[in-house]
Image (cartoon, rainbow, N blue to C red; front, side, top):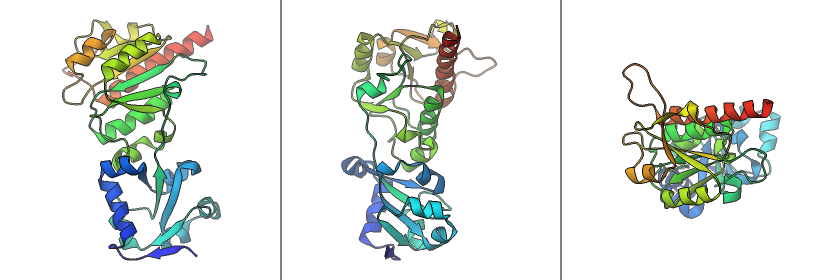
Length: 270
């Protein structure tokens, strides 16, 4: 029989609340929370360690949904407990505790794939929605990986996790201490880096992007640091009409990645 928890002061529930709130605890345990029917269903089973659900969710679940979680430790919790742990205003009634994915440098560079590496390099992107959207967009555009500074918002923040729509399990990533040094390493691998910058001299769609490429995206308020911009191979610009001075970080990343994707598809058709 599944365990049942009805008290919000239960030690396991307090632990889940701490995991939701504290990035440091998530890093130490390599565990994070996934919430909601769709996201839990999309989580690869190899990453799930525990499942928490309400009676209402179980009653409304299909046979296939219930069977999916039958092999995991299942705890039935009260609505009050689910609300206590949840990061959303209207919890859907199911939550999974999951292990963090990790990736090798070879996977981030897409070793073994037919296409050349296509990377995003993020410096201190702070908005959870932006980071999650960037992961979804990078996957859709065929990026091979994402490198992030330690100043970037925690990838396993519940808001980021929701915004990735499970791309967090499919898009290779790495958190880096020194992005400038990473650019040097990438250059040695034949990957050219482009800093999205208002001082760019060439428009993004004037670049040849069928070879190994990496786009640098900076902080929402301050853009890229001077040091990292100087370390890039080239500064590029996204031309804008009207009075707009800059674009949302996720939007800029999408424009750049899909231009590279377009060029690569065109090269294959030739």
